[in-house]
Length: 300
Length: 209
Image (cartoon, rainbow over all chains, first blue to last red; front, side, top):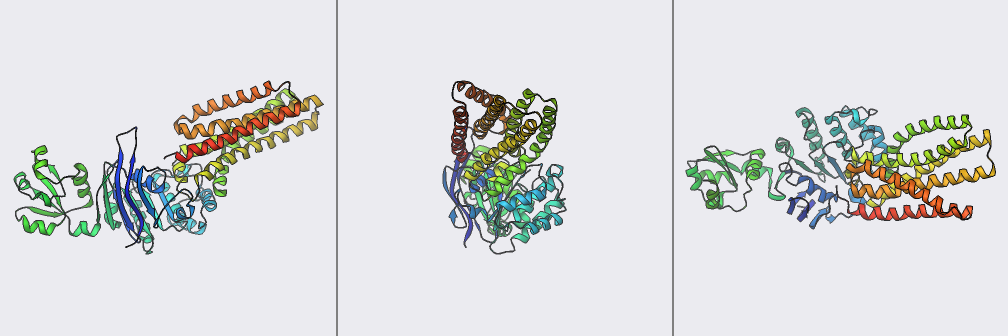
């Protein structure tokens, strides 16, 4: 399948902090939604910065629409809509002024579509952005990102801080957007319920490293969590463990094939796993080496 | 590029409108008082004020939102972003010259100038234009280098340095022929803005958000 976005071995170090992006690789196919999940400070925004060239990567390649995007490739940026968390635009503008400015920047700016979004989202066109609520500013940013007919939407925490009703509305808009076969969305978020609703693929990032990229179907139908007692945990085959986490007397173990695990370990409870639980399992303790003996040494 | 320039003009418009109202009152006052002294300050404050307003407004937009970062995702090259900032600065500087020029014209119409006074007024215009250009030349690269959180300090430094350098230029050329003196002041100021543009471009190309 052809990819609209492809990252290979992208690395970035920040000399003044301990944080580094470490060989980040993932791909987003045409027509798909990729949820980019990780805790605060995991490296989601830095990765997006590397994609959009707002951060200069040290190494690795980022391909958009099949090729690397350089500063001069304005035609490629015509096809990308971006939404950042918080105020994307100067607060003393009105949406109408924003539309005029965007009209001078994007060849395909559709002022009529923008006005339509303003109507749909109940955003007053003549009111200054300063007087907008947080939800309204996010809706405005989404309206602006969609109004130049992009192919790829890159949303960096675009739904965080929104109430569930507004979030749901926005997710509907995103789902509408990906109805077109050549449209894709990269949605970075730590609100995993949003991703449950719209993502086709999930990429988990932790401490600047991609821990796992998996399709949501795989996650829903194959991945599972085993609820083990300590003695059961010790008896597990290390190869079966993707990640684990101790909770009081119970140890939760993430496995990539729930049915096989159920057949193999008949006395262990095997549950379906949510994205949130996977995130907790992967991010509480990165799985790294899968040796139970090693991990038992640390824990027991 | 055109869109980015329009964006910079839009942002500056809000501040410039308020400043223009103040300068209008000051202009009326100086014409009414028939004081050449006030008139010269009107020219100097007007030109420098318009320049300061333009740079402050452009960068204020970046520090109160993610617009600085967002701009890089728009179909605009970094070079064009820098170019539009400088063009906007020069545009507002000359808007200031036009504004104060009109005030000066009215003053001349009502009260008249002697030949020597004309020379003095033109020199004040040169001083104002030079200071206005130098403010941008110093502040813009410093802003991109120092970041949004130091804007006020950088602006203060730029303002003081620009006025100081412009005054120095006027002083050191006292014994030079009048027209050559004006030419030297303009040449040095425009050269400074050209060097500053190049420097800003180098800084901004590496700038990360």
